[in-house]
Length: 448
Image (cartoon, rainbow, N blue to C red):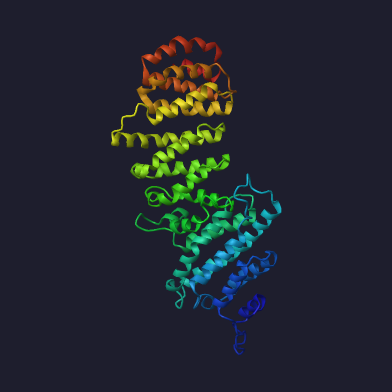
């Protein structure tokens, strides 16, 4: 029976006069299996659009007892996976330098996603309604819901944020799908849906990562342009203490994305690593030398010339360095140069020769934190730091004077932590250059 005929049969299932028997309809298992099989085929997607819309109307009109009675959770899971694949954005070559310029293909993907999201909304609504029916209940709905929550979440995360393959309609539908999915799972937020209501309860993050795992490998992660965004959008919802349970699953993809040659991917990966550092105990990070692996990956990024990446890396390193230093103290390692010294030495080297204002501002903003981190040990770098302070104070960087203000804060921190040696620098050299400074810089200098 064609979908249109089946839809008419379902709408006539309850006769108006009570005398006409309902038309015969095939089991839902057979119907949904055939639809999923057709959607999974590699044929053109144009004729499938009408089928997806008819499927949405079918699910909306169907009775819960016909739809879920005797229905295998595996069949529903395969159908949802097929719909998710149908709505996915166009694939790209693994080594492509950028997203392909396929405006028409992305527009079509957004329309497909909106249609598929409508089907998911009707399906989740039917599952919610079936929970309250005596013949159905949680014992029937539960296994089906567990099977479809992971793929439906990935669909929502793929289309919920503005991307090249989304539009206003697909984003709105994705938001509604995610809200209804969280409600169907009995949770109050997306974070609770993923991690569980408490530490003892296992959430759905493991299932989501299980689905993403096959696409987050070295050879496949670039083929689906949405995969990295789904991962990076999902990860911040898992915080301490839950994230440590999934460290083996989230650390390798984060390192993989950060190791790419594209700046956008590097920043995305570094932000994922930063979230992991902030939300995983130091003992777990140091186990199996994980912290050292992350440190070397971040340290290599310091040779970049892109200000947004340098800013993300420096912020991440400032939170990683205490973890490394604590591990060294516990292992009683006597190193002549600590990781913080290595980082600051390279940063000061780059600062001396840097002429780009954007990078100068990024370096100047981060420098006070390194001085505070080292404390009295900043005297090891005092000569080079002196040259950087004087060089940055002599160059105007715009009306806001961000670089100069950052350097003055660095000078203040140096005086606080390394006097009396640094007081000579402050009084004998820096103050003599007061005529070069004006506006907010001079007002801050006079505060000394």
